[in-house]
Length: 219
Image: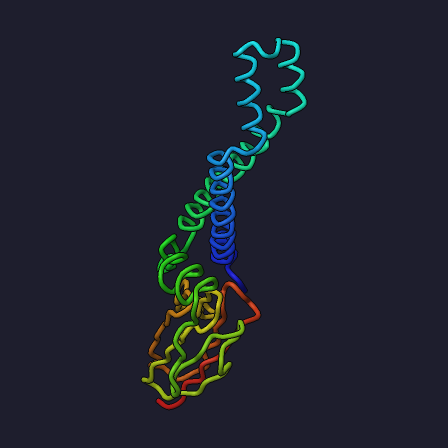
């Protein structure tokens, strides 16, 4: 069964990344709007100049300012910036919670998300290229949210290497909890040597339907 803490951590990292991107975009849009002003801001500046020169009286000034709606647009722009800042703060909090809740060996963190091989870095879900392809032999490829091959037979003493060729992070986790890869970002790999004959079922804790089995023969 899937360990809820690990699965929750993976979802928190993905939500944190999405919130961070949206928040940064909103803050940039807000900053551009604030710096650029706009036609209404220019009109209000001209109106204030006319009032200062005595060309319009106080009643006319208030009426024209109301028509221009000088108090509504800036508030709307400020709301965009506020939402952006709140999303960024929420992303940071979610990242901290996900990092604190990860198990030992879990390779999370902002570096794991935006660095090489991370979900938003080269080889990641939003990166420009895919991870390396697993070599033939005693290697298993993770792609399309499945293990390829799903069942692999080896002899005692051989080492299996799992490669994440997918666009999503995965784990290689023994069903009985005896061994665990931790988080594997796209492009990362995990190795384990099998010294005892037997059948070793495993799964991805992020995707419980993604399963595989290692069959070890010999003595």
